[in-house]
Amino acid sequence: MVFPVSGPHHYTDTFGAPRSGGRTHQGIDIMADKMTPIVAVADGTVGWMHDELGGDCCMMALNHDDGWVSWYIHMNNDTPGTDDGQGWGFAPGIATGVHVIAGQLIGWVGDSGNAESVSPHLHFELHTPDGVAIDPYQALIAAEAAADPIPRLAGLDRYGTAAEISKEAFPSGSDRVYIATGMDFPDALIIGPVAGIQNHPVLLVTKDVVPTVTTRELERLSPSTITVIGGTESISDDVLARLRQLTSAEVERLPGSSRYETAAAVSSFGFPSGANVAFVANGDAYPDALTGAVAAAQESGPLLLVELDKIPEATATELERLHLDRIVILGGEGVVSARTEQALHAYATTVDRAWGWDRYETAVAISKAFFPDGASIVYIATGLNFPDALAGTPLAALRDGPILLVSNTVPSIILAEISRLAPTDIVILGGTGAVPLSVSYALAVYVN
Image 1 (tube, helix red, strand yellow):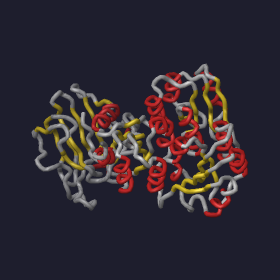
Image 2 (cartoon, rainbow, N blue to C red):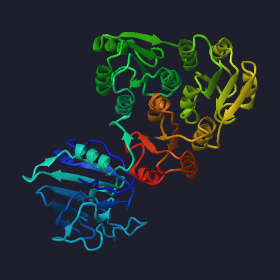
Image 3 (cartoon, rainbow, N blue to C red):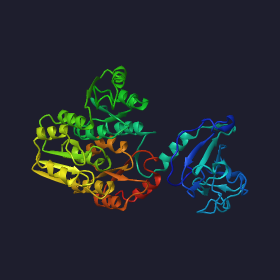
Image 4 (tube, helix red, strand yellow):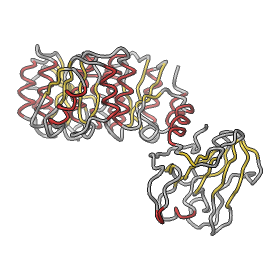
């Protein structure tokens, strides 16, 4: 099956959810901007159509050649750029009885019918040859994967994506697994370099729950030790107890009463004899540090946290213990001030920065500084959230490739850096809700 929406989109499995009047939802709502193209999911013949303006416009059925049927509802009924109800949702030539092929344009996303008061979307239904509506969610997931021109490590959510990354990086298991919260960034950020240096995965949990997908990956990895990052405010004791029930591994915690203390504890654990270099990031803002964890792993240094204008006591104590030659600040003076930079000179001979005007330029600056000769593989993650890039740190460190960031588009500076790196492989971290297919297509031409 071809995915029905050809453009940026997102969706969740709402099949069977309650609706007004005692109804249940019989399809999946694929959220996308108005006028995003809609295509035929299979070879077939156009069946019923509702195309009267002001009525039920615009919706249609496609009778697949193999007997299955798909329904397309809430197609556009507005003149482009308006909400006037005077346009058409169907592509030229689309009419009852017309045969179409999979991937052919049949219309555009809109908000017609009872969707006028909500965001534009395509309500997509899939019916068996017997006329029974089934949940199309897994078919949609499979269709996206088949259409993706770039390899992708993705689960249904951040926990699933972390598990998929772990499977790719550690196919034979791992004797240690690091566990961090998926609800905030600092703990997963600071353990990344240690995990990358030691070649161990990072999996994610919530404060009080071990997701099923994480449980299954722990069973596959069969570790002898599970190390939980952060104090009880990040991950409860109930989760540690659950981990002990699930596995025969020794379960330990690297605690801290704050993110700064936890970062110092992780550094002391990972670098008991000190280090030549340490990386420093703002403990209240993740974007500039997202890609720095890979560089820290490459340089065999810890990642510590500071405030904008202050070096917390726990960080200062650990910086002194490490006996550093160099400190690398991740981000510009807007996240780590010139005052803090000056104070850091007390702990290392050299203090420099890897930074840009935004998170994307910072990612490029880090890539240029630590991959000056290019890279055979590049990892791509969304810069709009933290979990995928941070869970990908051990894999990127293992494969010796940088992580670069995108949004719903690919910034030109990122494309230029990929061109400079000249990779033979590009891998996306995260599903199409995080990195849409349109980004995959833009990246595909840069694979050598």
